[in-house]
Length: 480
Ligand code: FUL
Image (cartoon, rainbow, N blue to C red; front, side):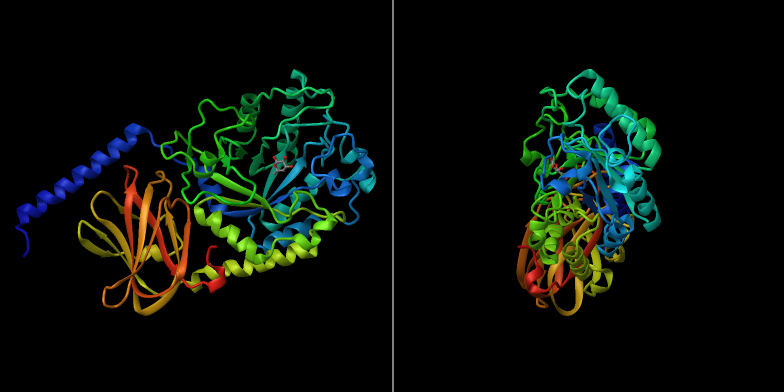
């Protein structure tokens, strides 16, 4: 029976008021939100890490810093080949170890005597950073730099003078090879050649980078812009908040417990999303004896489900070999990985009508099916908030992709996916916690007529549900 107009108007007014109150509460709490640079970073999803330097030639993982510069001598280095492989893999950028812990600089730095300039490679005239930054520009890839603070070669390491050296080096790299998209600060911190450990002046380095390049995203164990995920196996928590509390923790000095890094803090004060770093091989550097141990495309797809599919970014290490090329086995695995990700391409989406239900009113929500995260629908708990996919006929599915528009913060803390047959009989229930940038949920193949996503817990701000899509993966591709 229709309600009298006065009552309908009153309800509308009440809804409007509660919406305003919610917004006010959110504003008062100062919820963390991503900066524009972080928003852009979230879109990058997957990019390559490249560990390259003397270790490539000596077989070590951590050089001692006393390696002769002659050992660095790639026979056929070609950064265009690196970029071609990255492009074929669908990666969005490359982060290179400009300097690893052994202190060897892949560019002719004015602040070191342990560089490509002192090597025999191209008679000391070569510059890996120059070539790679130019190739990345040419191929439309982001260019990022890993610059190890720990330096086992530099004579000033362990003294305040080293902080000047490190700051000068940063400046040199940004000015010569920028724009630099992501700067990677490794947490490893041991002794230098004089047996001393360094006390790093990170606040100074951070200030300098902000001044030189405000758009650069800085990674370290605890941010400021992106955090370590707490393991080197490429796996984010099934609960993954983009927010973290960093008070009381110093960068590189044993940050929060790894479990916290893995799942973030629900009420964390800072927006510091997780990045999953993992190597395609057992080691970070190339070793010929690991040529047969390259992760398969299938294994990489599983890692994708557990990193990008849990709202984090995937930083996959693919180390150039002694020729200075990406090895054939690695590029073959990357091509297979790219093919497998096509299983989740827009044209593989199962046909369905999308709707949302709020205050018992059902509305069409076709934008849940598109790629655009900015066309999200707003839902507010505690009223029953759900979205649904209605299939034209019974449909086999085993994978659901969800996403939130994060520009105003992350909201969903609990969801349940329910699958029904044409008679309304419940066939399967799958529960989860956070959604974030992307959440890929896979389960045993089920033939359903209707899928309902119930949002069961959220932060006190409107949920901006951007994506609800269903797919059918080959059985052996669902998350293991
Ligand atoms: C670690 C380093 O010690 C490894 O050599 C590698 O660079 C990895 C990405 O980070 O902390």
